[in-house]
Amino acid sequence: MLRTERLVLDLPVETDTELVAHYCADPLFLKYLTTPWPYTTEHARAFLTEYIPVAWDSGDELTWAIRRADGAPLLGVIGLRRDHEIGFWLGAEHRGEALMAEAATAVSEWALGGAVAGAETLLWRANEGNLASAHVARAAGFRRITPRIATVPGRDGRTLAAWHAERRAEVEPDAYASWEPILGIVA
Image (cartoon, rainbow, N blue to C red):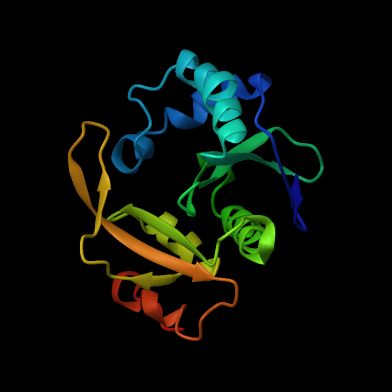
């Protein structure tokens, strides 16, 4: 379990099924994520009761539920894959409060602070155009990079153009400014 000023990050559980199904039915998930589409309650149940426990046990992916510290229901999820890539989503009703940036910062500091063996850099990537995810990555101290091949896998097996970023334990001096070309924000 991880805690921030406003959030608790803990294990997603089967009682989160209805909210996961509701949040993942958002049309933005079709556009930007690789979750099944259309997303059903059975997809949510399998994610919570099969995928997450197996991935935690194997270390392939650590996935946390994002909840308010006051015990409110699930807001979204954040995960860290074995290859040190961070991914996340937040229910539409909870966007706009910088909650995901807070969660991403907490997971990044935890992983880069020694909790994950060999984690010197975390990676982030998203489909080109996913400005909300890019804003989160920027706020969490990720520096935008341009890899030789900038892609992400699509749900149909195609590769899609993507934005990439990385984060080290100490936020690099140019991290915030690196986002100017796509976000139009000057550090």
